[in-house]
Length: 532
Image (tube, rainbow, N blue to C red; front, top):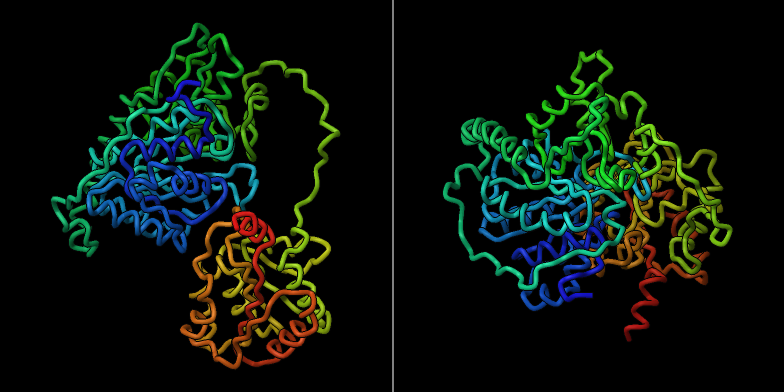
C-alpha cells in the first residue's frame, strides 16, 4: 500500500485529518462511538512530537470550554463527544456561537442510532441548527479526513465553531483513506480582533446576536457552493432523492452503476436551499434518506404540508427508529430485496455481562444482601459498566437515567421519604457529574448512602484514565462529607462480610454517607501487567 494510503476507522480518519491540518489541542470525555478520536491522537507520533494537548477532560462541558479557550488564543482545537455528551456541553456550545471562534474550532458529535451503547437516539444536527452553527456530516472515511482541514478553514473564515457529525457505522468501520504526506504547521498565538463578543454580558450579546443571524445566512450560501454538497441529475424524475451523510453511501451501494433519479447529496449545513428547491420543483416525489431523526424531512415538509410529496421517516417510507443500512434504504427505493445469508451459528448472540473477576460484582453481592433486609429498598444506578447490575443475576438497580443522576435521584427519593435510598456510581462518572449532586446532599445532610465503585479507570469505554484516581477521598471530604461517614474498602471476596457490615451501618445513618469500594478493573489490570 502506498505511504499516503491508510486503512482507517472513521474516527481515526478525522483525527489524522485534524493532526495534519495543524491541530494544537484535543479535548474529550470518552464516549462510544467517539472515543477512538482522542486515543488515536494520543498515540500518534506526530502528535507526540508536537506535544499536541490530548489529555482526557472531566466531562464534555469542561472539554468544550477548554477547546474554546485554545481557540481564543488563535490555535486550532477540536472537542469530541458522543451525542448525549452534547447535552452536557450545551451551555458553552450554544454560547460559542455568540463568542465565535478565533483559531479553528471543531466540535465532534458522534451520534449512536440504534442505541448500541446509549440511552437515546438523539440527533446532534438539532443542536447545530439551534445554535446557528454550521455542521459537516461526512458520508465516508475519506470525507471525514478531508473535512478536518476544511472545517478549520471554514471556522476561521466565518469566525465560528463548526460541528462535525459522525454516526456509529462511520466511526467504527474502516476504509482506505488517502492522506497528506506533509502535515501543516500549528498556528501561532493570536488573539481576537474584538474581545467584546467574548464577554457575554447582555449589552454585548444584544449587539452580537444580529451578527450571528446575518452570518448564518452567509453560511447557507457557503453550503450551496460546498465541495461536499452536490446536485446530480438523473433521467427519471418520478422521484428525487435527498441523501445526507452515510445515507448517501447506502444509496450509491444500491446503484453501483449510477442512480437513475436526481440526487442532492447533503454533507454541509445549513441546508442548500436553492439546490433542494431545484430538486423539489423538477421531481414528482422526494425521498429523504438521513441517518438519525428526520431533520431534513421536517424542514422540507414544514408544519402544514399535506401534499404527500415528501417521503421519509415521518411517512414510514424509511424506518422511524434505528440505523439506516443498505437493505432498508433499498426497500425505501422500491427495489427488490437481495438474497440474505442465514445467520451464522458459529458466533451466537449473548447478553452483556460484567467480566469474571470484576470488582462491581463484589459491590452488588454485598449490596443485595443488605437490601434484602428491607421491604422496599431503592437503588439508583448510573452510566458505566456497573449499569449491568440491573441485569440478572444481580437485578440490583431500580433506575438509570444519565451521568451523575444516581446521587441526585437518591437525594430526591430521600426527600420524598424513601428509606433506604442508595446511589451506586463509578469513579469516572463521579468526577464527570456526580460531585455537584453530592454537594447538594451534603448541604442538606440528606439520608442517602453513596457507593462509589472505584475500578481506577473509565472502564466502559475501554480503560481510559479516570480523573478521580487517587483523589476520591479528598474530593468527598472537600465537598463536606463527614470523615466518620466516609469509608474505603477493597472490593475483594474475602472482604465480603466487612463490606456488608459497612453498608448496613451507613444505610442506617440518618445523613449523607459515602462508601468507596475499590479494586482495579480486571481488564486494565491485565494490560498493566503485560506492560510491566
